[in-house]
Image (tube, rainbow, N blue to C red; front, side, top):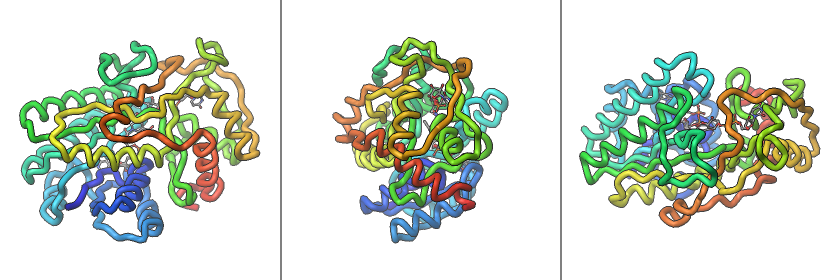
Length: 338
Ligand code: NAD
Ligand code: WQD
């Protein structure tokens, strides 16, 4: 029995490989290195002390996927592979629909051909759009998304639900991640963004290490405790452990199940800056800048469904997130090229 991990060299994928191996699963990894480096795999092998098959393969390559499925007995797929930059998706919608939506259809076709009926899918809190109040619950309406990236996640959730209806033996666990941050406690794997980071923590890390002069805090006039945007930051190792539980759950006949992976706690941008400075003793110069288009004031999860169905809850603290992010950044100032 093996679990196929698509996009397993990426940020969340590499941490999930470690947790899946630690839980005793055999894994097979595919990635096209569009947004990752082979060195991440070397480090996963070093940290886990285990080897596993890897294929450099695009999820849109049907023949390539057939080779993977015919050479390995795949019981379930954890599907991370996809493009994830919100701003880029507005400029390049075709690439996003092609990679994320078409790619998943190709993969489903091959899964079907080989009788593989379990998928754990990387969805996102972005499917809730800006219309629902936090805490966000899985039964709230979805689809009021504001960019092509978010639309790929919403559409794929709907498509996977249709597949479950058409085949009652097919299970799809739709994991809605909130804001993943942090890194493995070894400091050997972490997020290695290309170019100028869009997300808060990678940008903050580049300021802390001196690569960038200051952080722009996007707006301090939101209706939140200090005026800056509030999000549900979750340690990537907690998130990875959620996938181990989700795979176990997907093995039962569960149909399509959207499940939040968050902590249930919201922190503001300034909470993050202050916690980071305190935990690491490193200053993070910042300026207040205008609001960023498309941002909402507050977004955090109700994590009760994950506790009930998966027996999972986030355990690592904001201090852990700040400390582990900095250990990765300071030990690998050039990411995997360090
Ligand atoms: P990432 O970019 O680090 O990892 C994605 C991996 O998929 C990369 O290694 C990339 O090379 C690979 N990939 C992309 N297209 C591929 C293709 N066509 N064929 C094969 N491999 C391909 O991103 P991540 O942060 O680890 O995110 C993983 C998943 O979780 C993505 O689907 C993302 O949309 C979703 N997600 C991420 C966040 C976040 O903030 N990081 C939040 C919610 C959801
Ligand atoms: C967090 C907070 C910003 C950068 C995005 C995607 C979402 C999901 C996770 C994939 C906000 C503020 C940020 C900066 C700042 N990804 N900020 N200065 O926007 O909550 O979610 O990533 O599914 O779909 O939209 O995350 O990290 O960009 O922002 O002040 O330089 O930090 O305004 O309040 P976001 P983020």
